[in-house]
Amino acid sequence: MPAVGGNGLPLASRLYKSRLLGLTLGFICVAFGMYPLSPPMWVWAWMLINAFVWPHVAFQISLRAAHPLRSERRSLLFDSFCGGFWVGAMHFNPLPSVTTLSMMSMNNVAIGGPRFMFVGWVAQALGLGTALLIFAPAFITVTTQAQVYACLPILMLYPMALGWICYRQAVTLARHKRELLALSRTDSLSGLLNHGAWKDHLDIEFQRCRRGPAGAAIALIDIDHFKTINDTYGHVTGDIVLRQLSKVLRQNLRTTDLAGRYGGDEFCVILPDMPLNRATEVMEALRDRFNALAYTQDPALRVSLSIGLALYQPAHADAISWLNDADQALYEAKSSGRNRVSAGQGSWLRSV
Image (cartoon, rainbow, N blue to C red; front, side, top):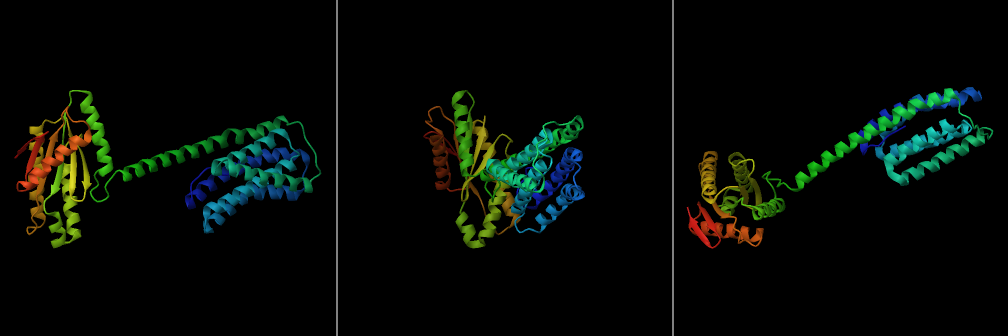
């Protein structure tokens, strides 16, 4: 009996193991249900093939299939057909029959939801009808004590195995979801927060500052004459410069600071609980380190940074007005000669 899985060959591998377990336990249940009926030898042979040969055949079919998921779905329907067949062959013995049909239905709903479960029921009905054509229709109303004990292993162990597979699958999906979320909020070139993610954090920081006495500063950082760098040295060199700046930001900021790529050659930083004079010192040190690093990498390459700083003010109506102050400070740094830090508090600006 198979269990839940994903797409492709990893699914076939997972279902191979669970089918081996399920059909082995199911064999015990069905064998004890069939034994009192003294079935012919071909029935025992088919029972052994279904339990111990079919799992390997189904796995090999999936390995060679162009679409392993479709192949496994067909194998699941064959499992359901066989389950219905054995219910009819056992003359509807209550506990073995209910155990067989419920385990098959549990598999089908786990792999394909309610719709596939209904398709599985159709396959079970076809198997049941086939058994009624081969065997004389009868109904056994009593499950013996031996048959009860024979059903216990599959009733106890297989749901545990299916639950474990579902749990592992849920953990994997949760990890993938976290990774996709991180990718959606990360700039692929710099590895920093992208524009939207950084703006979200800015809104959060603004609300934090508004609720209490804590303050913060934000910085907008622009690489001077970046277009000239691209035109002169090429976009590959331009990308190297961008990565150098992101590296300097990661190495020289606190763990609580949030750096992002605002767009193009412009970067942005949130500096929580940092007064403006300290933020100015940090940005000046960062500017010096970046200039020195770039010069070491290529003596012919001259790069510098213009940085605008803005401190949170209670007068700010929203995060955008706070960001506008940093943008005005950046404009002041660029218009007054570049390669400098300008710090602003509302309408008041000073160049460093």
